[in-house]
Amino acid sequence: MEIALLGGTGDIGEGLALRWARDTDHTILIGSRMPEKARSKADAYQTQLTERGVEHDVEGYGNEEAAARGEIVVVSVPPQYASDTVEAVVPALDDGDVLVSPAVQMTRDADGFHYDPPAAGTVAEAIAAAAPAGIPVVGAFQNLAAGALTDLDNDLAADVVVTGDDGDAKEVVRSLAEDITGIRALDGGPLANTGVVESITPLLINLAMNNEGMHDLTVRFQ
Ligand SMILES: NC(=O)c1ccc[n+]([C@@H]2O[C@H](COP(=O)([O-])OP(=O)(O)OC[C@H]3O[C@@H](n4cnc5c(N)ncnc54)[C@H](OP(=O)(O)O)[C@@H]3O)[C@@H](O)[C@H]2O)c1
Image 1 (cartoon, rainbow, N blue to C red):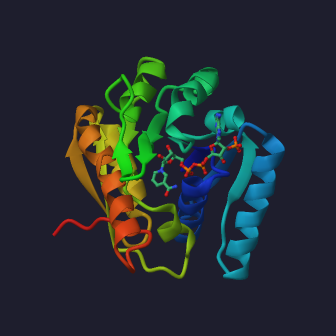
Image 2 (cartoon, protein in one colour; image 1 turned 90 degrees about the vertical axis):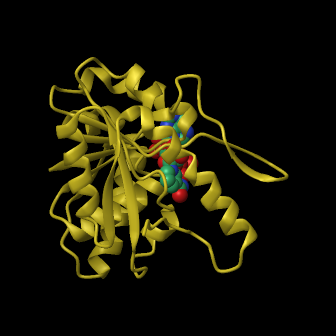
């Protein structure tokens, strides 16, 4: 499968790219607004994987070309740019593609981080509003700390809650999440349920900030 990571040059994009490249034989397409930056980041990810003796397929492209090639398109950009980023790649999306939102919109003040969803209800729903009809959106990975993914020596034991209205799309993303060693993916219901998943992330960051040894917390429901 070909997985495109729009803004795959950033933190969560790097983490997902390295884990999928290490744990699967999927092709990982790093996207960027600047194709040269994507190629350079892809090279850096390849070097890391090669040093570990891992076979991989990581390539760098502009966001639009990554979206055109990818069947799964992860919108891994800051939440306030998610809708514009999707709108910019709409011509590149084909029937059967699936958009994935890992995004969480938060504010920060002296007390810590606060959930601050956009007018659409959630970032996932804002992405759905920007997406063409017929391209399903799935919420996933919002509660995975990038640092927990990028440290490939870290043994993950994390749950990923997957939300969406298209059962087939949700199952594809659930299965892709579980392709990453140490991840269990759980069905969180329809896309309208994404808010409760997104809202867990500021809690995780506040816990990490206020408690020793809780850096890069992940969630496990048991
Ligand atoms: N970091 C985490 O631990 C984490 C965990 C779970 C979910 N998330 C979510 O994942 C998403 C990405 O987070 P991140 O921490 O990876 O973000 P980030 O590193 O700050 O940014 C990711 C990429 O977004 C692109 N970008 C920056 N400004 C942009 C703009 N104005 N328009 C379009 N693209 C822009 C950049 O790529 P180019 O310059 O190459 O285009 C950048 O490398 C967020 O929505 C966040 O809520 C993050």
